[in-house]
Length: 239
Image 1 (cartoon, helix red, strand yellow):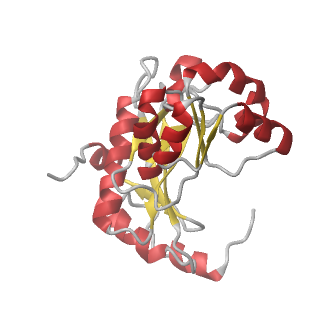
Image 2 (image 1 turned 180 degrees about the horizontal axis):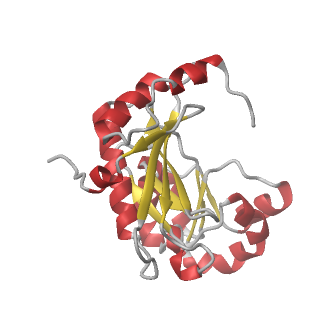
């Protein structure tokens, strides 16, 4: 096993592994145990009671975080006609049709974080799916990235404003970034609640028994903080 440094061990020593912390306690500890010199990302890791071997139990959806993730999101749009300029006007970093597809295919252009496409472009975009797919950039209706031209401005603004896509890994765990350590406790709390509401809404009908089994809060390179699942599930957005 890899050895941890002194700063990590000092941070980990602040966490009592026999306890499951309340959301308020966990967020306070998160700020205290982040020891890196940059503004660390905050991640939530949830172990779910699903069987990823069954397609009908896998989760792939999105959540609009009220305070965003603290990261700048580069958006590319595959469209044609007037929708190209409309996308750029709405804040897309790149927008185009055949020319943009060729750039991705021939130049291996991947300087973007999210790709959005109109339905009439998917026949062409599918030809570069072998390049977009492995990088998690292929537009998909489940992630809300295949939308009619009329919905492009709204979708682009949502993505740039804090809409996050998440899906379980092969072990049934979700790993989702919900902000930065520099966020206020209230901002972190509100983003966290939005994520949990989205996770509960996305519960597959085939999932049996306990759905949310463990919840862990952590920061970049920091130790994980186990949270009280019962208290987490009763949290509501403040009025």
